[in-house]
Length: 78
Length: 230
Image (cartoon, rainbow over all chains, first blue to last red; front, side):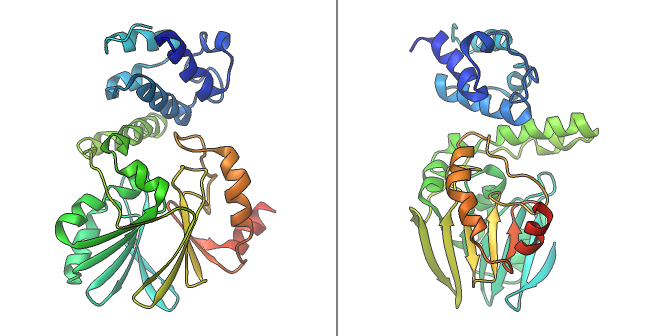
C-alpha cells in the first residue's frame, strides 16, 4: 500500500465513508468525526505510519488536507 | 473516596479527579483487592495507612484511565495482576498507553465546559508496560481470600474488555456497561459488532438483582437499568 492509500484508508475505515468523500472531510463534518472519532483517526494514522503524533498536531488535524501537512512534519509524504 | 456495603463487606470507591474513573478496593487484613486502579491521590495513602502489603489487581480492560495507578502500586507493594489475554497483549507495549487520547478528550471537555482539566493532566502521561501474572482467553474463575470472582470477556468497548462477577451478587463492568451513560464502542480496538453479538447477549442474561459496579458514574442494580431502558 502506498502512503496515499494508507492515508485514505485511515479515514475510510475510521469514518466508514468512501475514498471520494474522505478527501473532503473536515472535523465534525460528519457525525462519525466527533471527539471520539478523532481519537480513532489518530490511532489509525499512528498505526499506519508507525508514528506518535504530538498533542499540538492532534489538535490541529482538522481536515483531510490538514492531515497531509501534519504528516509531512514527520517526513511522511502523502 | 466513599464506601458501600457489598456482600456484607466494605467496598471503597476511589474516583479519579480528572477522568472520574472508579477504582474499587476491598481490604482483608494486610491484603487488598483493587479493580482498575486509577491515579486517585487518596488510594496510595489509604493502602499505606491500612498497612497493606499485597495487592491483587483486576483489570476490566486496557485503557489508560483504568491502569494508570498500577506503576505506582508496583513500587510500594507486592502485586498480582489479572486481566484478559487480549488486554495483556495491549498493556505489554508502552506505545499502547494512549494517554494522548485522554489529554485530547479533556481538551474537548474544557472547550465545552470552560474547565481546565487538560492543563492538570499534563505530566501524567508517563508511558509504562505491564505484564499480568494471570490472563485468560474467555473466562476465568478466581478465588481471593475466600471471595469468588468469575471473569467473562466482553469485547466491544475495547478488545480486551471483561466483566467480573463477585460472589454472584455484584459485577464490575468496567466500561462494558454503565448505569448512567451509553457505552462507547468507537475507540480504537472497540467493535460495535462484537458488542452487539457477544457482549450485549451476555449482559442481558445477567440476573436482575446483580449490582452493577461500573468504571465511570453511578452504580445501580441491573433491574433499575432495565426498567429505565424498557
